[in-house]
Image (tube, rainbow, N blue to C red):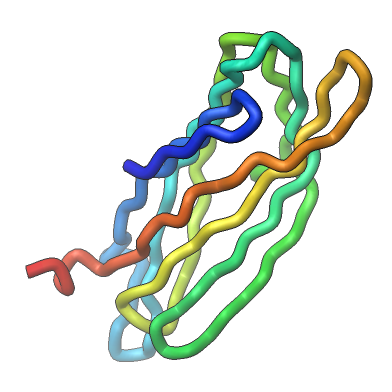
Length: 128
C-alpha cells in the first residue's frame, strides 16, 4: 500500500493485478486499485475533480481528468473517510500512476490540491 498526506488529507492506494481480465497475447494488462481518502483536517471538505498521469513501460503516457471519482464527489467531515475501487489497463506488464484531487473546504469554498502518491502497476508474474 502506498500512502501520502497533503493538506491534512491522507490518500492510500492498494493495487491488484487482474489476470482474469488480462490478455497478454493482445497486450492487455488489467489492474484494479482501491483508494482510501481520509480527512485528518479540522474542516469538512469535498472532492471536486481528479487528475491522473498514467505511465506504461511500453512508452505510452496518458493524462486523465474528470469530475469526482467513480461518479461521486464525496463530502468528508473531519475524521471521516471515503473508499472506492477503480481500474486501469496497460499495454505492458509494468507501469505506474500518480496524480491529484482538487478539493474544496466547505467553510470558505477555497480549493486546494491533494497529491495521489505514485503507485506501481506490475503484473504478478513479473515479481520473481
